[in-house]
Image (cartoon, rainbow, N blue to C red; front, top):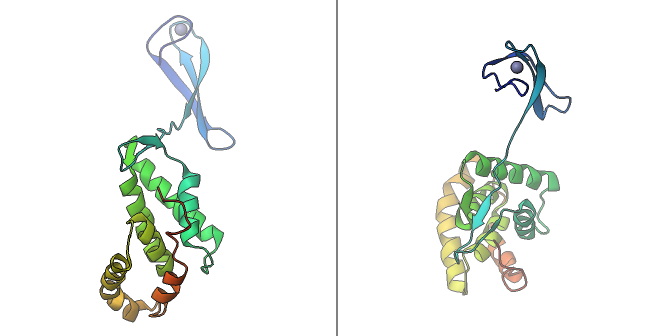
Length: 184
Ligand SMILES: [Zn+2]
C-alpha cells in the first residue's frame, strides 16, 4: 500500500484488528520513508448478483423475491419461518460463492427445488409445478410419477420424508399455478 503522504511504495503493517462488528479489518500502517502512520480498512465487497431470466432479460438478484416464491410453495405446510430463512441463507451463500456476477434464473430455481425437496415434498411439487410451467394435468402426473420412483427408496430408508400418497391429490386441489405470480 502506497504511503498517502510521501508516495513511498512499501509501507508496513504494524497492527491488524477486526472492527467491533467483525465486518471489517483495520490495519495500522507505517511508512518507513516519512514515518507517517495511517490506517486502512478491509471490507468484504460483495459482487451484486444479476439474474438472467429465460427470456434473456436481466435483473438484480432479490433475496425477497426468492423468499416470496418459496414461501408461497410452503403455504400451510408445517415449516417454520426460520427453516425457510436458513435454506434461503444457504442458497444465497452458494450463489455468492460461485463467484459469478450473473446467474441464470434456471440455476436459482434448481437450487430452490433442491432445497425444498429436502424440506417438504408438497412444497417441492408446488414449486416445481410453477417453475417447470406445468400446463396440464399430464405434466403434473409425469413429474409426480418420476418423484414416486425416485423417493420410494428414500421413504423406506429414513422415513424423514412426510409425503404420503394422498399428498398429490391435496396439492392438486390447491393448484398454485392458477393464482400465484409466476416464479422467478
Ligand atoms: Zn511516507
